[in-house]
Each structure stands twice: as structure tokens, then as C-alpha cells.
Image 1 (cartoon, helix red, strand yellow):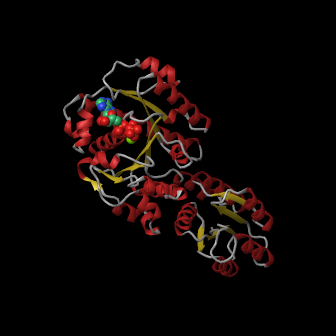
Image 2: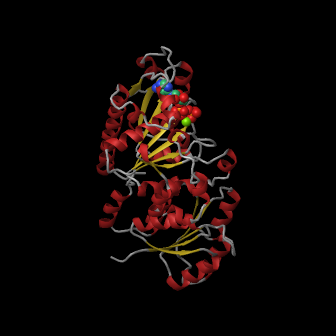
Image 3: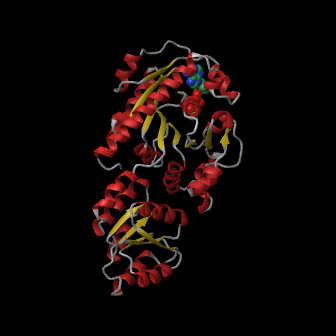
Length: 398
Ligand SMILES: Nc1ncnc2c1ncn2[C@@H]1O[C@H](COP(=O)(O)OP(=O)(O)OP(=O)(O)O)[C@@H](O)[C@H]1O
Ligand SMILES: [Mg+2]
């Protein structure tokens, strides 16, 4: 079967690599150019079946490129899709009137729309499609930790459940990514103070995003049994992060590791939403008090409105303070979804373990704490497995 060739013209190397890899995985052959002129030469010489262009190019504008393509008989009718970080309606209109068939803004969500558009223009025949459907489920299982309020224990649970899994599944490769912006705490919990973090990785060169390079680059934290992707070192760096690089980074993490734990804290932003949508499961951490349950209900309603199925959302009650608090039934009623687990108040244990940068499972290996962490992670694994099986039999994962 002949392969369909897609030319990507984009000045940003990480975007190019990300899209190129995704297209290759889906059975397309990929050509790449970093400037308008280079793109035109390749387009006329190779005559690809479709062209994806980021209109922001160093030499020509995307509009100029597409106009030249349209005027030349070799590419006059080649489907051209704009993939841009510019959401300005004026730019969209000018690109479409210059000759683009479609215009998409860069985001992890829109990638799947681009594939549907490409498939419409250049369908790949069915045997590959069936295989591709399976490949669309990312290798690495992603477990996202979210809360509606600060101080609920989200980061402690994220790090400790990842450490528990590392002990249960000895051979598994695990990464814990801290996406709490502008200031995260995973690094301080696990005791990492090295130089690699979300800021350095999303501003660095393209090599860093290659799955193999990524695994080597991210430090492995021995007592915890996982690699860590620390949050930016300060708010200044956090503000400079390029949002469009987060999607490709998460995708690369899921290719490199068997499990990706993500601490999102209480962020519901345009950066975190695609991550929540693509998660295998979301552990929604809630403390048993009315102000938190009220906010959690709002978060839950938002997630459901965004189309995230409730079976992917696993509320977990944590008691970081020694007060009585609401009983489970009340919490469930107030948030509007049944919580799956409850973690008791563990006194100063968590704080002390965090300060010593020690996983609870190690410090209290014979304790009830260790047993409940193990039960929780085993159950999460079982649920993820079931959801993935459903995805394979039930349709495309987007
Ligand atoms: N079950 C628990 N028992 C006792 N202390 C706990 C428990 N869970 C968390 N803590 C303590 O509560 C505090 C907050 O925990 P953590 O930093 O994990 O919460 P968070 O939701 O990530 O907070 P932030 O909003 O700052 O990101 C820490 O001092 C931690 O040690
Ligand atoms: Mg936190």
C-alpha cells in the first residue's frame, strides 16, 4: 500500500517533531521544512498529498506560501491546513481567503481534529486504521491528581502513590510530573534540587523531547523509585513557559514511561484541561469539610461539562487535619459523586516523612498506611486496565 506523504512547514522544531511523530505513528510519511522558501521547494519537488503550515514563518507569511502553492499547477489543489498558535479571527480569515482549506489553533486537543481533517483529505485504508486505533492509546498510563482547594494533600498523595506503585511493580518505569504552577512541591517532597525542571525542558532544544533523551534527562530519585519532572524553580520561570510545548512533552513522557503521575494541584487552566481530558484516571482529592466539597462539586461539574466521563474520575477523601470532618456519605452527597477511597488523618507522619524526603511506604512499611496506599494503587491499576480494554473494543480514544 502506498504511503500518503504530508509536508509540515513550521519554524518551531518541537512542534514539527511532535506532529511529525504523531503522523508517522498513524501511517503517514512525513516531510519537514523550517521556512516558507524551503517548504515551497519541497512541495514542488516532492508533491506531497497534503501540507500542514504554521503561518508564522521567518521568511514568508503563511498566506504568501499558500498563495504561491495555489498559483503553481503542481500544488494548486493540494490540501493545505494551517496550524497556528494565533487564535485571532482576523488571521484566521486572512489565511482562509489566501487559500488554506482549514485553520486550527495549536493545542493538544486540536491535534485529533487535524488527524480527522487529514483523513478526510487522504484516507488511509482500513487494515492500517485498525492498527492505528490501538496505537492512538498512549503507551504510558497517566494518573492525574487534582483538587479544588489548596492543602488537601494532593502532592503528598501523588508522590506517595507513585512510590507505592514503584514497590509493587518493580520493573515499571514511572515518572512524577509536577505541573502545579507557578510553584510546585514535588521536588521538595522527594528532596530533588537539581537543575532539570518543566521550565528548562519546555524552553530547551528539541532533543529534550525525544523519548529516549527524556528518560535519561529526568533524574531518578532512588528511595522513591521514580523519575521526577520538577516544577519551574520560581514564578518568573513559570510565567515564561510556552503552553504549546506542554502537550508534546506529556506525549513524550507517555511514550518513555509506563506510568506518568501528574500533580496538577488545583489548576483548571488551558494548560491543564487537555491533560485532564487525556488522563487514564483523575484522582480528585477532597477534604471532608463543606467549603472544599462545595468547590469540588463545581470542579466536577466543569469536568463533566467538558465531556470527561465520571468513570475516569475517582474522588479520594483525605484528612490532612485531625478534626472530625464530614462522614463519607455526606462528602459524596455534597460533591455529587461517590468517593472511592478514604485516607485517615495520619498525624505528623506525613509532614515528617515529607520533611525527611521519605516515602510513607518505606517509613511505615508495616503500618496500616502502607496497606491502604497499596490497596488504593492496586485498585487504580485495575480500573485503568478496564477502561483501556473498553477503549479498544469501544472505539477511538480521543
Ligand atoms: N492524611 C494526612 N494526614 C496528615 N497530614 C497530611 C495528610 N495529608 C497531607 N498532610 C499534610 O498536609 C499538608 C499539605 O499537603 P500537600 O502539600 O500534599 O497538599 P497539597 O494539596 O498538595 O497542597 P498545595 O495546595 O500547597 O499544593 C502537608 O503538610 C502534608 O504533610
Ligand atoms: Mg501541592
